[in-house]
Length: 311
Image 1 (tube, rainbow, N blue to C red):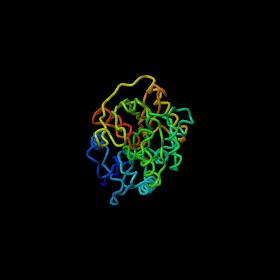
Image 2 (cartoon, one colour):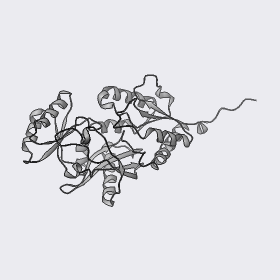
Image 3 (spheres, one colour):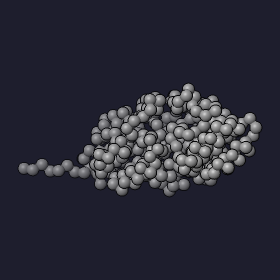
Image 4 (cartoon, helix red, strand yellow):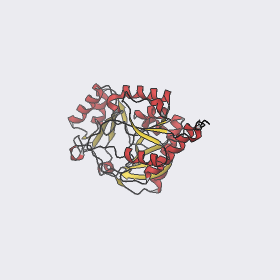
């Protein structure tokens, strides 16, 4: 007597957690191991997947969950091509359309137009325009320059507005084909008051403070990019702001609430609570300092993976 094949409803879903193959010692991936363990504890077949590994067959997975493909800025064309291939083959979260929208920080201008307070920013594609921004900054003030496509604060610097190094950084970004963002220093950021609020399925799970990162004159505090994540409390106003920012993302993109989101904000004396970034496809979740969140994320992934496997 033959054994009936298992129904699709009973099949173990296969989930790929998308990573890369190497990380600097000062910026390690602390999330993949606990997330994979939490997914396996829920009965899923979960494995890390290096996004640019040619031996990986994305069709083997019911679901790919983008987590730490942090080398994408140096391989942007390759990454976007991989993303398009993965999207055409299986389900990817967060949604590739959201990823493409979030890749370029011009999205901040769109969110500002929808009423989300952001750090005041100009976007410059010509060095003369950057020079004018720097020259018009009030005497004795500092500015932050960064490219619109970046991760891990690459090519980001805090400078006195009249420091020639600021213009030199802008020239480097423009020579590489990028667009330069010019922002005034927010003193609270320089004092390490930035908070990252995390939402899973739109619900706040935890908040992390990273400490100050940028050293005046360019470069990083301590000489290397290194976050010092610690759980931090949030106020009702900060939580409401994060939810409004995520709602504005939905209005801007027409997409549903993402699997996960990180809303970086700071409560400033001059501007009030302002958005620094909305990280919607590869934020560090900092599960090593918020271990309880691993199962919250795994539960949200499981709901989607089992629904996909049952189709």
